[in-house]
Amino acid sequence: MQPVSDHVASQPSRAATLIVGAAAGFAGLLVIGAIGLWAWYGTAVFFEMVKTGIAACM
Image (cartoon, rainbow, N blue to C red; front, side, top):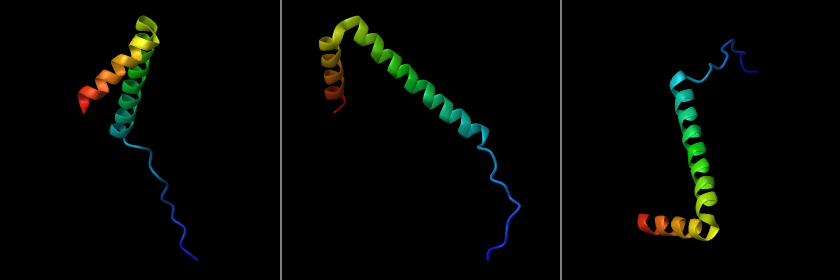
């Protein structure tokens, strides 16, 4: 039998919480931007812009 520890897992550090929050906010902005482009330019132009952007990265 293993000894029982009184140590309770600590809460995540403030820096980790800040990083996760910033990443979630950035992802949310990307989704909002994509929806905005879709609404403004329509589906055909939107997909062409995404395709061109991906091709430029490679």
